[in-house]
Image 1 (cartoon, rainbow, N blue to C red):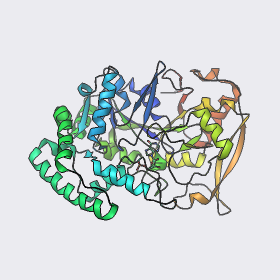
Image 2: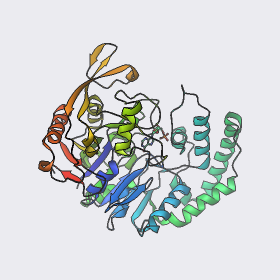
Image 3: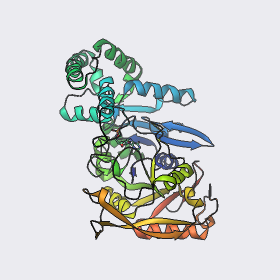
Image 4: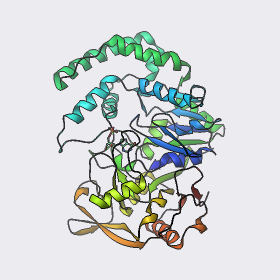
Length: 425
Ligand code: IMP
């Protein structure tokens, strides 16, 4: 049976969790494959809001298995807090979740160093990270000095590894950042608290997933962040430190590529971004605030106000290209209902010349070419039949469909699970 993938087409916060929630109904296993507690996935069911950071949002279904893949960086302390808060809502987490033995452990010094670099940066060098330690942990992974979840299965060796890691990190923190050192025994105790509760759920998730797929199970790969934040295909260096894109989904889950069937790109009907970095269609001042308030655009993880701007066709085409997206879900279309007319960036000019791609250099110099589309000026919240949308709204979606050249399979008209139009298979 197939694995389907949900991947963000913009700078994260596209409403992936809502789409994942809708698709989870027809899925057996939901897998997070990259990122860490920097993500904030919001799902609304019957008016009640749930926010997930590390645990796949499919956990709110009774009969689904959730997997934290090898590509995730797992902060064990944060993870336990999140599990506790979800279990308080009455959901079983431990009985339904597996953790990859190859996922890297994100430890307190990762967060301390991330925050210290961010706080010490000037406007030229600041990335605007979530300060969750993500980049520092992935750097250790690439340096081959990280500790993995599976190391804990051999406590004696893991403790020795941790001793060396803490020794080196304490020196680095002192010399480079003027930060106090960490007590190795305290960090070990935190790890053991996590291990005692979760040791029976740590497995080789790549093996598990491929076996389940062979047996006919349906798998949904859940991306965090988005293509614009991909360390290779995003707006480097203003990116996260993982690959949310399709290649990263295969690497971060260990699912064989031949199982992958649908790659569904999630795009808001406009664009938002948190943190620093270029954003060609960004709106400033009152215009930006208006869209932010209409869309309730505040970060689910950090509460930061999101930067807002108009839909950008070149950006979506870039995402379609690098991910091999064969379907798009358009979210938050209801947020545009208040506008008399809606500008869409249908192309780019760079240094006075038209270009037909999303440039990897010089995006800050790009001037969007806009076309205005008539608004519909009526509340469409919750409509779940395309034909019931106002004519101008239907036309707007049809035009976007033509401009991006990929079918729109799902349209979200409000935050709730039921506020969804499904257009095709
Ligand atoms: P980091 O992932 O915390 O290192 O942050 C790097 C960049 O990615 C910053 O601009 C963050 O605001 C952004 N970012 C990280 N996670 C998310 C997310 O889930 N949604 C939106 N932006 C994110």
